[in-house]
Image (cartoon, rainbow, N blue to C red; front, side):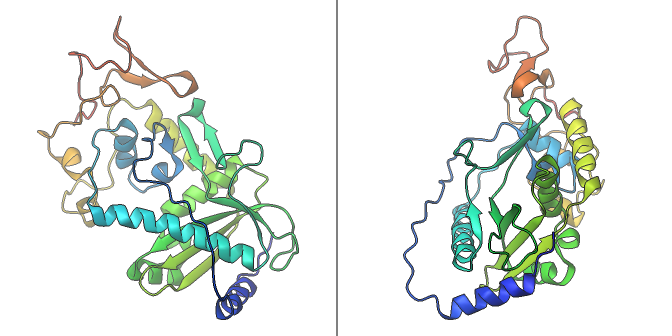
Length: 288
């Protein structure tokens, strides 16, 4: 499928010049949403496999300051405005799967690997593409520095995590013809669009990474052995990764005796013990 990004951008710019008054009902999810129990595609596609493993085993839950919580909400609001723009220039957008009435989702490995898509769209009037078939649309917000890097290098180079994420959605849902990647610069409201074609090899990489995370009872390799490495310095798991005296948050999930089971559940390897009932036999899974 071919998509004319320039034509879409021109249509949105024209609409922006004449959009007039707006009456948009925006429902923004709250920050106290139910904690994710599965391994998300967004997590698995991050560069460091150890960080993804830490997240899956829930060794540490960071308390975010108010500013960051407001940023999370900003992302939700921008998504709704993008959807409004897309519909205004003629694209058909589905925010929910008509079959389930819920967000579009893909799943694998007995439900332990899941991913939720932003939206699915179709160019039914063929205004910008050569097909009426459905495609994925993902929305992201960027600060000025990252936005400029994205525009210069493209998603695959500037944000391999996002690139892997959308390829995972496409790989698990072959009816999607590709991805329209939408980004907004939070500093000046500039927008960027990029069409991402399917990458057949990406899904194999995702499955290999998922299998290693799900089956490992010890931390996976990290991207650097230096705590001062610039990517490690901004990681929430930095101390847990490098300092031997830092203990994981105590829960059944962070115990080395816990392991994934069928249908997205977990079980305890200890005889007579039930997963979900923290006991005195807890042992930190973060063995360094």
